[in-house]
Image (cartoon, rainbow, N blue to C red):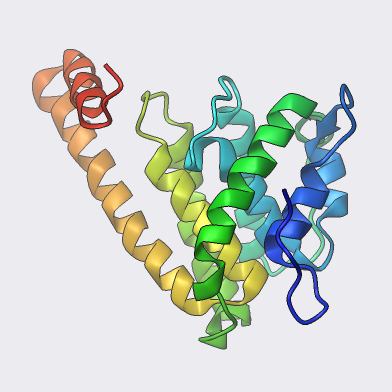
Length: 218
């Protein structure tokens, strides 16, 4: 369900829903999305591509292609590009209509819960320097998101998702919150690497069991 527009303008949830919504059985791909994001630009596309891992939504096999696309977006943000270019192979990655609708529904609920706190502020986020700084964080988070460690890509994906919201709505304060979560994600991965180096690969299984217990997934 779409959220209502504010002051005659479409809300972020409405724009995202419109970009993802398709007729039953119709397939969406990353290339189509990149052409449809409109004035929300890179921010909306970052939100969409990080959605399955950030909220999370069951979408096995999508972390790597979505992560590669996010990394390419970050590189182009760092270079100051305003028009997105993606390789044809990445553009062709398909998002089935069922997954697109689940993504739209989950994002709509999340955005409606936080939209009262989202507003344009700390306009540094729209400057070239702001874009470059955010691009570095997004690139690091995209790499972490692609690492083949189960149940640990939510933190970096959520950072990318929040930065996407911040870019789309020019909310610099939200981007600062995303930075803080990003630091936590980096510390988590540093701890994982430390466990692997000191205790061997079996430490990953212990960490997975601990995360499952923490999230009541066992």
